[in-house]
Image (tube, rainbow, N blue to C red; front, top):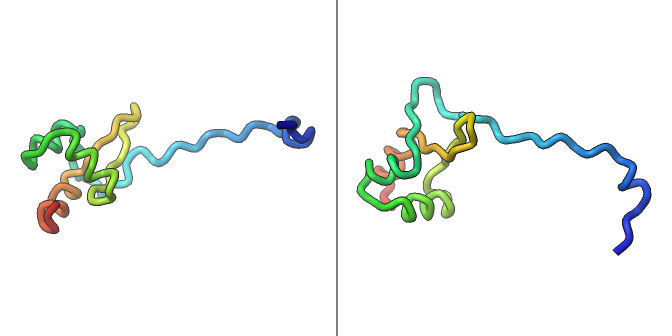
Length: 80
């Protein structure tokens, strides 16, 4: 596979990470394990909820996946 010279001469694009925390102010965020313990499931179930779009996580400044307590409340209202 050959690369076009114009592509090779372009400046690499700067990686733009997602915003660290898009939750409402004052909302406490929990780790995957803490969130799973709070609703009585294991960590793998919590990750499944995230993958299926039932929980909308955020990332901490260090990059760790965090779950806002408000998302847990929404999940419990709707049911897994």
